[in-house]
Image (cartoon, rainbow over the protein chains, first blue to last red):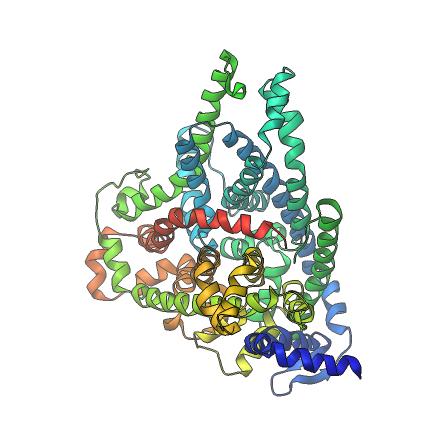
Length: 302
Length: 296
């Protein structure tokens, strides 16, 4: 009783805060929480006339899924592509930021940063168009390879090469962003540490190994741990715009599979079942990665 | 100081380092220079592989073709969508970040409400259930379908919340003593101070809405009302088709262009706004990272 009355007392004083958030709470409820309720159709045989009250079929959709060899293949493809993207997405920006940090001319440093940052801001639709043009059989890269007598490479149409085209182009698009993050961490290192090292006779290489890298480690750990939550996101926007049936064996990922099944073929229940499977695994991964980030680096989401 | 005392080995390293960084920068810029060159080149030169980074047989036909097709309308739809989307995102962020920046004693519901929003970051209904909800609300084919499902970008809201927390309390206390209520404080005292943070999250939001193509693909059923990215997405696979079905007026023009130059022109026009604004917004972007990383 006492608690309740004090809540109302607080509410009278604080109603304006509630008034501010309420419209957003309602809209978020409609657009984020109602779809959660819509997940029930993963356990139903969806019928448009009945909507979310369609007939229950229990786990049938999931059993059907895991019996599909194509679906199991997408899980493997997703993990393969995503893990390599994460690894390269840490290694490349760390290296580039270390090299950029050695550039003394501030103007030049800024110019490099601006240049490598460009692809990060462009959409995958646009970059897919650019990649299709330059990687095509008569594109600039294959023209150059032919002139060098190396023969042409089918970057987008060869199932063996396709995943690597995805991995490298994804790292290319995003490394500018990572570089800026690591560069920010590098500028935060106490210059006193370097001065002490110089007194002790350490050269640039030793300074990098014994000061810069250890100082950078928390940021690297943090970025790696946070990236873990996205291990089932192998990049829908990129792959959907660049793949074709010839490369499905190695290039089809969970998200493109859901899209074809759920949206293109309008199999709502099975599409939702795949989506649910993926979000459940992702949610566990995200929560563990936040927990690990908190454990190791003291990072808090809020 | 001594950190920069240089030996010969260091000078050599510096030279190689600069060359290496120039090469890396070029990989990020040259593809777009090539795209520009292709878009201004004649079809035969492009097909023969003569075009590198400068146009060959300079022609504007690809651009004239682009601007006389569906491109201009798709561009306008995208601009409208970006404006509406940014307005909605910023409003939602401000209305939630300010109350949530209060301590639990100032705003009793704080933790529960913050949790309510953060949950949406971790779990969501996914593509199909969200589509079904939007369809049920009758929003298909409306610009609201592109804007409302992502009305509250939680990351941006957290950035803003942390920014507000770092402002000195005295400002608000002084305003309160002057008799200003919370709405007044938010509008007249806080908003002017929040400009850098708002610019940062507006940038995230502009880029998101400009670049999003899937929303248009799923929620807009009428091809003629596609926003720019969605329209370009269809172009990636069907440019030849569009050229083949183009009317008689274009026959002359088409002799000067092909699918590759036509596509290049439209892709370049799409990239242009981003290329023009991002260098100026870059410092806000970096500022956003710093703001976001300081936890309250």
